[in-house]
Image 1 (spheres, protein in one colour):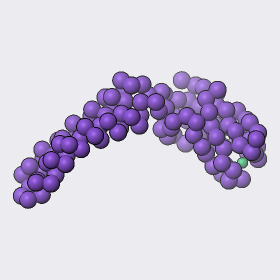
Image 2 (cartoon, helix red, strand yellow):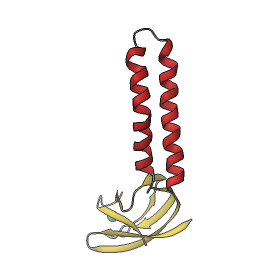
Image 3 (cartoon, protein in one colour):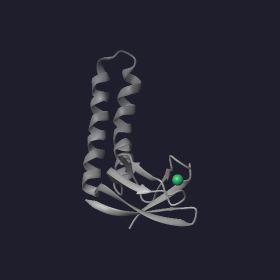
Image 4 (cartoon, helix red, strand yellow):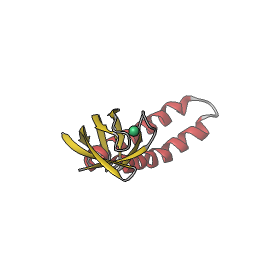
Length: 122
Ligand SMILES: [Zn+2]
């Protein structure tokens, strides 16, 4: 999905565009579940290790759901930026937004003038 973004900095505003993909609760829950199961798998694999398994098995068993919940909470309102571009409201130079996972609004540093600019969805 292509969206218009609003870039604010130094009490000025400029616009840009970004190709994005939104995370929803279902997709975040799937990823959280995968992390939980992955952690349990690691815990199961360490059962054969002498002594170490006394620590790894319980911590992986208890840590799996906790890690899954953290992953779910991190991603449920996030957006993947696939590509994006805009212009710095302070110095006017154009810049590219690197692919990343963000929560709105997020902040970038201009590569030319080092001003911190806030990026919001329009
Ligand atoms: Zn700038």
